[in-house]
Length: 284
Image 1 (cartoon, rainbow, N blue to C red):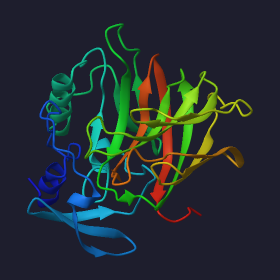
Image 2: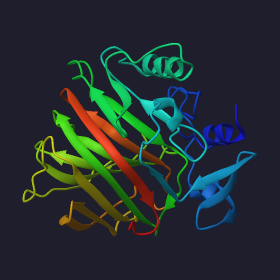
Image 3: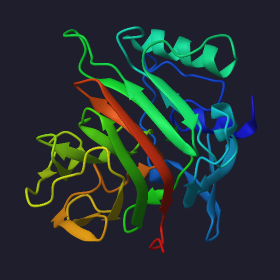
Image 4: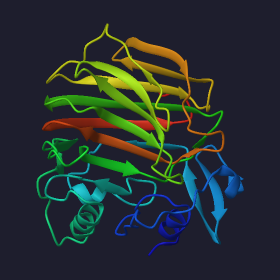
């Protein structure tokens, strides 16, 4: 196991490549105040926690040009996947499946992530009545965004089939239930915002409908704060939402995880994603 993978687990982060930590083992809350900052550059923050040190990155890009799915993972790349589905409906089952996929011992079952034509293709079946949601997504959990930071995100999306509820999440893996901002599609028509946390503040708009089976660019700007934050969302060149709202669960939150794809759906869906980027600086 790599030193960085051990460090990620020590922070209570999500699964690093080829390793999955059971969420049944409830990691102690790890916040910014628990972490020692060793060095900071424009590209990364070097930190130490629980005897392990590693880099947490301030930016990340991927155009999915590599034709093999497993080549998307590694140092400063995607770190894990989540395919919660009727065929793997429990944490233990989808973690086991994920490990087998990374080891080359299994293919996907129902929910899938595939490389094709230079884009990432996510497919999810509908959840069963006993499930809360279904997922098919990539995750990078080695990022560094804290209070006062600007978070800029951009991705190209094509909704091929169905409409998921969320398509991009920014999460805090060091806190129980992984709170954080996420980009929603309200009423299966309109881009919106929700902070996944105890009180779940939401912001909606009903002026700009998302296109179906047509590429559009999603751009997000967040000013991170537990009470007086800012969320701005663009659909292509249209600013569809601009609101002051909480964008962190707490003042000591560390948003370290980006989730992209079908991050939650209550119906069968297929979503294609391309040209993903996240950064502290405005994306050009």
